[in-house]
Image (cartoon, rainbow, N blue to C red):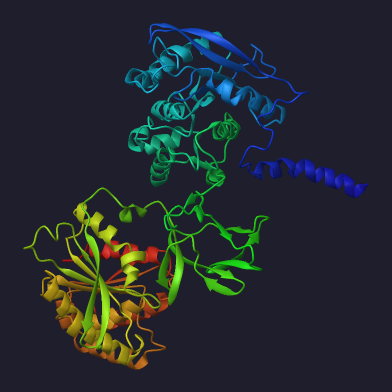
Length: 638
């Protein structure tokens, strides 16, 4: 009995806290079915005078269970789509049933819900050509009708709270666009804004939220939801991406479905529970039922899916497999459902590009739903995690250069090899201009495709050149793998000879590349960084710019090479410093596996008086770091 009393006490103390931590992600079965034995709200039709339209207009109003004129209520204005009117929600979604059930479950703040006709014109019926210009314009005109006529009428005739914190607006399709346009355009009037499957009338994000700081300050909840098969999804997505880029808290909610009431009823169920009560914005990114298919998925593949909080859901069809794991550096055990589909959702992943594999009954293979990349010494799947600040390698409406694959015969290695080369915008049309050239190398376990694909070199340079932040240049992305190991004296000498005697002459014979040292740069990441240290420092007559990313001499493995290199640099420090316009060394923070080697190397550079510039971008030994390195290094060139 004593223990039971303690248990009751614990439940009383912590039960509400536990319930508060639960996050409902979808309406349960029966949420939209009438229930017996509960209190019900009431639906009425109202008529108000619209000075905006010059006529009497109709709306529906829902008053909650236990409604009393002695109380004051917040108000939700709930808008319909382009083919509906004030009765569309009632006929298609029965919001009174959904809200009654939520009240009965104690999940909803008492509120009044107004369902107006958002087609603000004298003949506001939904018949005829609903896409006629005057009818479409009437949806924009409704903003004035709402603000100047309907809201004042409601506040005069009903016991409502009249401040912005107690006023919400939401809608479906065309009404979703109206809700975003009117709500975000009138933050002095609305603190709660919801768009369900918002239609093309939605303003461009920059117009919707021209002042992100003001939106952050004034919005309580901004809800944007859509079905994953809805043809209008892109309008919600572009708004979401802009809000992410500008740090405006919001809920981006995707679910299975199209442009229909299944989606919109769930939107009302989820959104209405957040209204007129304290909210935890830190949980906004956890609401979405589905994620967005990764940009690295093959055509039409739905999975992997990335959630707003950067967790990733994977689904693999392998009904005959006995065990399946996802390997993202960390291994995740997958679970097989009754259809034979293996599923798992990861922890929140860091920004940018990640290699991954599936381990099926012990065998590591690529995901057939994902693009594959050469990395880790083999073909592997890759996934791109978007993040705030990744716009510098976004595909934009700017002039674009080209990435070309070129095969050539190496006179040094006596074999056919290939490289990729970026030619800047206008290279083929302006056949007189010559360009400086950056030679940039990949890391160990990768090849010439690394900078061309994982590195997004072309997009980075396209955007920088368009912004005037980088000079137009050729970027040569060769294969740094040699017959001998790149970490040995023989391998480094092979690399240097191949670069000097074969690759550079080929480039300058076949492309309009300038041939002076001030017009050449050499850079590389990891293994390519060591190759750059060796061939670049030894050939400052060829290269005036050196970039070393996530690299540094490995004193424990390359003692003889390192000692000879430092001796050479000490004896030639004046020459090196005078001939190099930039010696740029970058690291991915302390978590970069090359960090300590780099610190040791730079201390030695200080000792022997070698000039250099050091930069850090946190992220470890990864492609997000190296993309940032290229972005910053290329702005210093030429």
